[in-house]
Image (tube, rainbow, N blue to C red; front, side, top):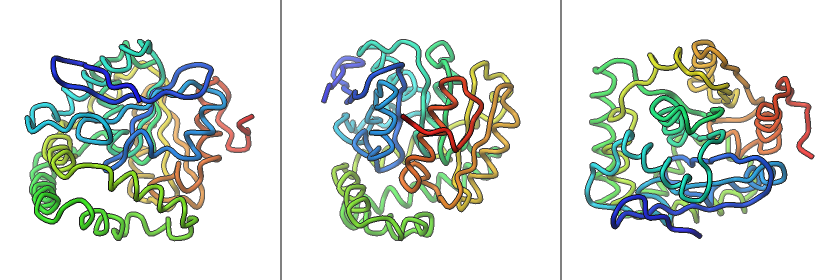
Length: 280
């Protein structure tokens, strides 16, 4: 564990493993750098992984100052954190909330991102009406976390239909994810929702056409909404590609870790994406 001071008194936790070319990993909401499991291990066989706990999550600080959670500020802090451990320019991969954040980094700090990979992510909501409705929903959820505590919230969160396809996963995989979630703090998750949620962030849809780096948008075939978003994003980006993962839902890297790792490694090593191309 390496806690990096990105500004006076504010620290982000950074974990590194593996060897080879660099890649930066950003987890989803309620996750942390400990959430990558088998997928992270597979990537580490070919790549040096730098995983950061986003503000309010894991071992990073969870400040009461909500300005720290604005996605533009978060993107800037993440670039500073990975730079402090020697990663100035690399591919960035993000899952769900981390995917939205990776898109923000690519749009706002393109010099730091040599390639972009997202899993189950979107660039935000396109209309103010959609964003306003989502902000109201996220505020209600934030208040629920603060009122009921982390354990009750995690139990509620894990029962959402979004995770239905994970029912077939081994019990030890699900339990490991639950431990990661329970290690978070109510205030950090609540403030993350308030300022980093899909309703709070700006829409990056208009900026996708200007992305200069290669972009791989991944989604599970069972995650219909995000599969449509991923295919559209790949079509807008000048160097975009879309990979649909058979039999997987929203967390494709958790449900089909080898398939997703194969796709990512093939993409990053400049090979035409083939899900049959194995990770050595």
